[in-house]
Image (cartoon, rainbow, N blue to C red; front, top):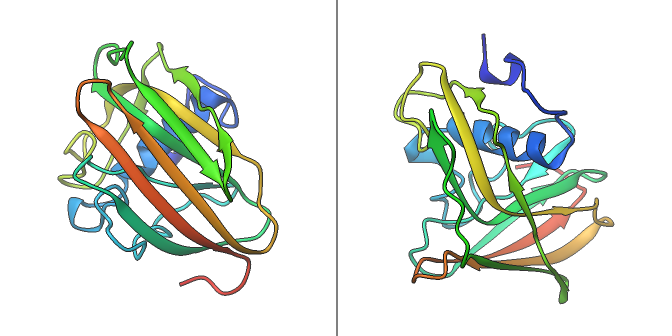
Length: 181
């Protein structure tokens, strides 16, 4: 059974459900095609669900700019910073910070945690649980749900960190609508 078919303990459109689904999305990609490690946006469309468009952060190794096509009518969901755990509660980062700018307008992400574990089954050596086996996961982070953007070009800039030197700095140059690549 694919991980997307495993039941969630959260409403799939709730902040907790979206965060859990985002973790599953990252686990559905190999480390060689990970949207988190993607430096150009070429892997942004990989395994996207049909009702929301996930954007990835980075591993904190410097600024990244990605370009991608997003279908019209899809909300976007992105972490400014997050951390997940296998089997137990994800740590809360009390000094974490995050900002999301959409076409220059600043948004403050919401703190979202999944205290009840959710099942994740990824591809072999994925960047989440590194296993094809189903594992109970939790996630904590600062997340932003961005309502569907109008067709055309948009700039989404995400900056976040743990407050101790780890910093995510990702800019997405999005084209909403049009052909998918």
